[in-house]
Length: 297
Image 1 (cartoon, one colour):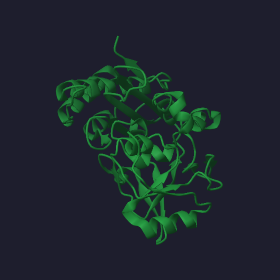
Image 2 (cartoon, helix red, strand yellow):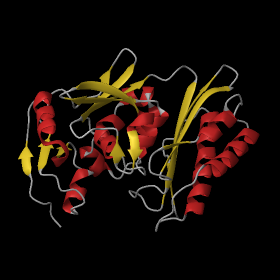
Image 3 (cartoon, one colour):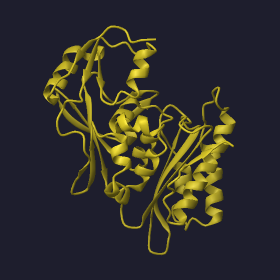
Image 4 (cartoon, helix red, strand yellow):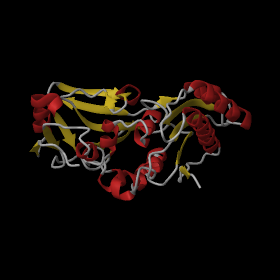
């Protein structure tokens, strides 16, 4: 199928974009990389009257090092972040997860912020940004605001963005000393959405005791899901085998995954629990899992 009819706009300033969104409200869609939006248009799952192409906006296509961490503006391609040695050193969780997003051809065009604004609950980046405690910069003609990732994802393909707002970028603070991260997901076939995934961030003191932990699952509900019961289990532990087993049990008891044609709910429950244990095991060894993905044989 092909998209329905729409008016195409190619503004050259952020102010012009925000004016268009304010004027056309829910009848306008922002186009950045297009890797999420164009399939929706082609299948007539979205039929905006106005398409606002932001690719001509200056100064939004490169990550920016700040005093406290990194800022990733709206037009930064996923492949740019994935290939950044500086970001890999500071935020290995983000770069590792990006290697699992679809295929390189998709990541060459797709933007980090585009994936976040699309808010597919099976996607890697919403879960990763939630695990990292990121903050999303939102702008409209009415002004600007910051929303923590914990509050940004509302439901399937639904975010805290209002109809006249644009996601301008995402900011991620530097990880505290002693922090380790890991990412795991399982897909039946390379390039498919994972049946489930887990992103983990844990801070540890000098003797290896966990002082803070964020575990976030993808693909098991309408939004990224914090695995708070497992987090509480491992805080105060050294991630010894007994603690890992307890965390795995806690995940099984805590989550209520949705089932579909790809996997029943019980399978996803067992899978996300096993992935959480693998993530914590990686963290216990101070390793950043650079593969991150498992496939069915």
